[in-house]
Length: 137
Image 1 (tube, rainbow, N blue to C red):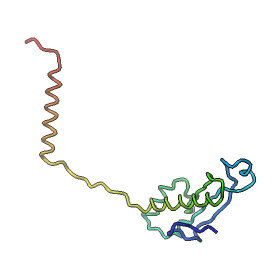
Image 2: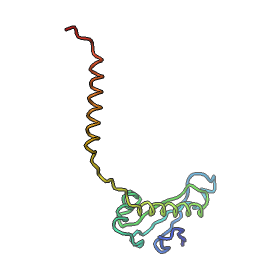
Image 3: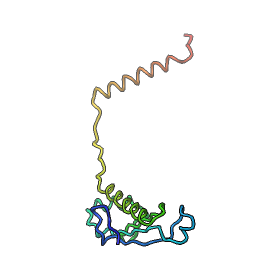
Image 4: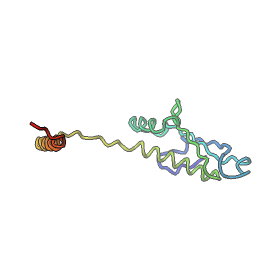
């Protein structure tokens, strides 16, 4: 049973499967199941509804219909390294989901700022009009 390094992931919420890995490893890839697939039961994490909503959005297709987060790590040559990577990725997803988005506070430009902008537009318009062909009147 995996021992999650992230404090908010209870060990009983994580299910681990070993898969045949791909990538580096030579013939070792064919003999040893080094890839790790973690299945985290998100309902066991006791997340606030807003955090759950953000996690679901961040996870995308990695979240199943029954509310489980499925991550596969297979970039390393050993099970232990792949396990650490998968747990770190789950922890990073949870940390990112817990961050509240910064909301923009709407502000209005001041009256003087509006006036300055209009004055600059008028000055620029005069410069551009002076570029035309001279008129013979």
